[in-house]
Amino acid sequence: MTHAVTVPVIILNDGVEIPALGFGTYKLNGSAGVESMVSAIRTGYRLLDSAFKYENEGAVGEAVRRSGVPREELLITSKVPGLRHRYDETLYTVEESLYRAGLEYYDFYLIHWPNPSQKLYVESWKALVEARRQGLVRSIGVCNFLPEHIQKLIDETGVAPSLNQVELHPYFPQQEQREWDRTHGIVTQSWSPIGRANEILSEPAVTSAAARLGKSAVQIVLRWHVQLGAIPIPKSSNPQRQAENLSVFDFELSEAEMNAITALGRPDGRRKDQHPAYYEEF
Image (cartoon, rainbow, N blue to C red):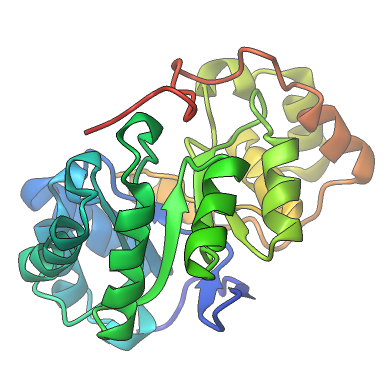
């Protein structure tokens, strides 16, 4: 099957390659979810982002099998939930994720939230290091980890995450977090990359760039992520929108346009009050 779009790849600190843009699967469940994911794969997406908590790992595995694309050409992510941070629980959760999906391995497995008051995320990280050693996963990372959380992982295990997936969009550009990740050799991924879509997509900084380049507002925002060096993982069940979201590698935003979009950042930019210093998810 031919790629509709060739997506550039980024080489992570462990040598694993990852596409510069992926496909989010949150709330894509059941047969309709499978159809959306198959459509995405056939459109050219090669990175699918899931989580144990999304309860759609089975749908992801089914989409992989139905897509007609060889498993080794696809990169599949899942995540350990806050309830499973103890060492043995994390290890069997990875195994259960594989059984649910019917896959031999995951390309990426991440800790979904640090849940710092539980003081178990280092234990969970040690289990992911072991899961990688066993060949259950190829690359390990984190989500929503602040610099102090990641530093603790590095100090206690000597292993840095390959990825840190965080909320990142024009209203919440995460400059400090991105810079910290970059200086520590960690690639930042963007969840909720369009943020509060209706508001962001009508911002003059976005619409003027869209008009100049003849692109949609969504394409402008996704291209902003790419030029920041962050990996957006937009979700859409609409095949036309899926193709549009992937088509962001044939144009470039100017430095002034990039700066104007970044300047949309707000102190209260998070979509919900999910600050990793205190927000916990189980």
